[in-house]
Image 1 (tube, rainbow, N blue to C red):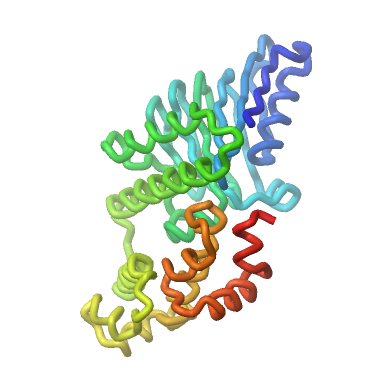
Image 2: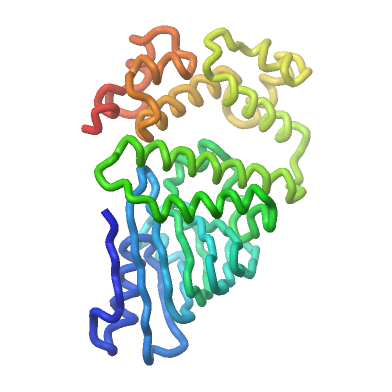
Amino acid sequence: MELKYLTSSVSDSHRFEYWSDVVCKHFIPAASRVPSRDDFNASFSVRSLGVLTLAEMSSPRHYWERDAEHLRSGPNEDFMLSLMVQGTGHLSQGGRHVLQRDGDIVLYDAAKPFSFDLAPESTLLVRIPRKQLLFRVPEAENLTAMHLAEGTPIAKLLGSMIREASAMELAGRDALQARVASSLLDMVSAVLQFQMDNTGVVRSSHDALFQRASDYIASHLDDCELDVEQIAASQHVSARTLTRVFAEHGTTPMQHLWKQRVQASHFALREGRVRQVTQAAFQFGFSDLSHFCRVFKKTYGVTPQTLLRGD
């Protein structure tokens, strides 16, 4: 269901406070101010799409700031993706600053302080649960406040998907919503990966090996025979070297593999990408259904059947 809020529905003297409260309620608690409250006309619409929340905003210039006090009093760990359809914005976070213009896509993190000076005639927002994004792109926290794949075909494709998803009428069609949300998340992840590969992020050789091996594991979760030797061979290193690199990250290759498997099955169930518990188990490398159910309940406190039913 889509919710629409218009400042024209309240008296002139309360329009800005009304609109600010609406945005904070549905997205991120933050301090907001505006150069002038005279003739403040704004609109905000919001809808759910599977695990995502989509919104469209139009307003005069205004300023948002989320500081340490907001982090304590209104904790929020979601990521926000902003597509500027028409207008401008200046986002600052983590020591980075970016000027957002028409067509630009930027990411910001509600778990950390930021400021956003906005003049959006039209901007589309996607609120993404932290776990869902970091599972796909663990380094997403380092990609805030920068142009994402600026001017490239992949960024234009993501922008088109956001526009189309925001316009789709899928009320009451939960399974389809989940699939569309999952596809949009995958596209966001692809853009972030593109950005990471093209920003000159400096990594140590061990960090690079860890990331490559993690990527290999993520793409082979369905291989129930996957082991340390196969992972090491894929990276042209010894099993001993691979184990040492994973130890630097507080885990082992096999612990990482099984953690990824149970997380992937959890997200597949939660996002509606599987219709049976057996599918969630076998698709991600569990060959024993009973073992899968035990590990799942130990990790998440509920059975996979419960999550599948949406209880």
